[in-house]
Image (cartoon, rainbow, N blue to C red):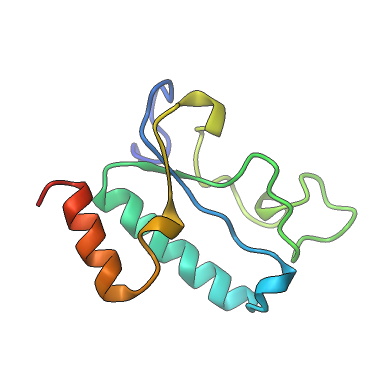
Amino acid sequence: RTLQFPDDCRGRPLLLHSLGDRKSGWGMGSMLHEMVVALGLAHRLNRTMVLPDLDEWWYAAEDCRPRGFGCYFEPLSSCKLSDSSDIVGSKEFMTAPQQYQTDAMKYIGE
């Protein structure tokens, strides 16, 4: 809980994860599964996972505000992209399972 909701987000290392868009063709279950994998990666890397500030998740209803993940779910973090300049995208590590593990280990120096 303290990793996703720290007392102070300023300068906190972040892992940016995007839920994808309609062109991806993914179902909601696949998107949520990938988000859980990214959340595990963020914790392994000691980073706070955040979603894009303008998250226009295509499963959100047109009239829902905010029109994104927050339409149906509680916030994933108290941090925002503007809180830090130390931001890494989750897609850099999630290309393939073996490559993801190798890159993550190199990144954290193991």
